[in-house]
Structures are given as C-alpha cells and as structure tokens.
Length: 290
Image (cartoon, rainbow, N blue to C red):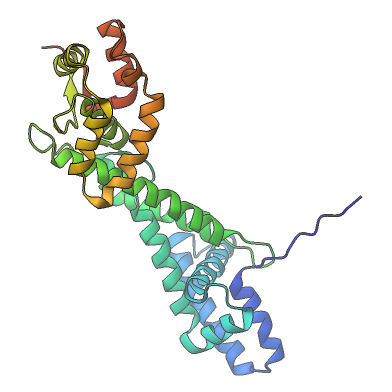
C-alpha cells in the first residue's frame, strides 16, 4: 500500500524564524519577538480579547497569519531565507500591515451579486472585515496553513462578482427610461433583463421592467420574428469594453439555457412566461399590473 506524503506548509513567518538558528543573530531574534508581541497585543485589543488567555492565543494566531500573508504578497514564491531577510529589513509590522490591507481590500469587494443598502452600513462593513480576517489569517504556528490559497480563491471569486455588479450598474445608468438609482441591486437580474429584451432589436437597454412592457415585448417578438443574434450584437455594440466579457458570457449562457428566450416565440401562455421571467429578473421585475 502506497503511503501518501503530506507536504508540510507552516505559515511563512514561522518558517522564516526557523532560519534564525543558522544565523546566530540573537539581536534579530529579540527584535522579531518584540515586534510580534506588540502586533499580538494590538490584535488582541481590537479583534479578540486582551484580558483572557484564549483571546491572546487567538490574537497570536491572527498575527502569524497576517504577517505570513503580507510576506507572501511581498515575496511571491521566494524561499524562507528571503522571508527572514524581509522581516529583518522591513520589520514584522510592515508585513502585517501589508497582509491586513489585503484583507481590508478583499472585504470591500462584493461577496455576491445581490447588493443591498446594508452592505454600506459601517457596522456591517466592520463585521465583514473581522470575519474575513479571522477566516483567512488564523494560523496555528505548529500546523499547516492554507490562508494564502483561501485568500487567492476568494479574491478571484469576488473580482468576478464585482465585474457582474459593475456591468449591471452600467446597464442601470443607461436604462432607456432614465437612470435607476435604487440602492438595492440584483445584478444578475439586471443583466438578464437587458439580454432578454435585447432580442427585440433596436438597441434599447432595459434594466428594469413591468408586466405591461414584457407583454409588449412578447407581442413584438411573435409578430416581427427578429433575429436574436442581431439584437444581442446591437446591445454589445453599446457596452463599454470593460463590461463586454461579462455580457458575452451571459449571452452565451442565455442563448442555450434561458427558458424565456426558448419559449417566447411559442404559444406558451403569458402568465407562464412572466413567471419564468421572475426566475431570472428577481427583484428587478415590477410584478404589479397597472
């Protein structure tokens, strides 16, 4: 039976400190110990609890992770000796601040495409920052740590969400009936409406709709039988370059999988079609018939 080899991957600051034994630099060791203790005290005061042993331990784990994340950002794939050199030259606090900035910037990115007014609430923003800091930077010095990988994964995911939100924001600002300024945003819903209404052709940008306008769209499509591809090309011609990748990806998906688009030319009842539209547009759809 083959035994799996588990690669040790301790936090980078721990691996860097291990290199001190080969240098004989007692002053460097004292300096690093003092810096790390100072950072831990600050973290305990602000994020855990500076009056209990458990709070101090959690703060120490966060210090280890925060410094390690900052080192990884600054050095990339450099070796442990390079990390020690960085700590000696720049200081552990400098590395920690770099790591914490990464977490702060990550927390500022949208987590999903449903954006509400509460997302800008200072209390919520601070809680979101703390939760991310604890989730990514808590690093037991004696255990393997995957904080860098978790950070990179979340960063990629959130940048993708940000691109969707920004594309929806542009569509809202260019809504045919005037800009939509509602603080609550269903970004996927906005994009869905724009793509569905684009099949009519003419380049009209629709970021929100109601039942009457949807009925008009269905009637127009069934009567005029427009070329959907032409309508999407007209939409894409208006979309700025920075949003085109998101829109092109959604058009490709909706071309094959959007039930509204698949059924709109058929004899499917209006009530059924509108219910299907609700699945895509969500809160961006005004369901009231007036």
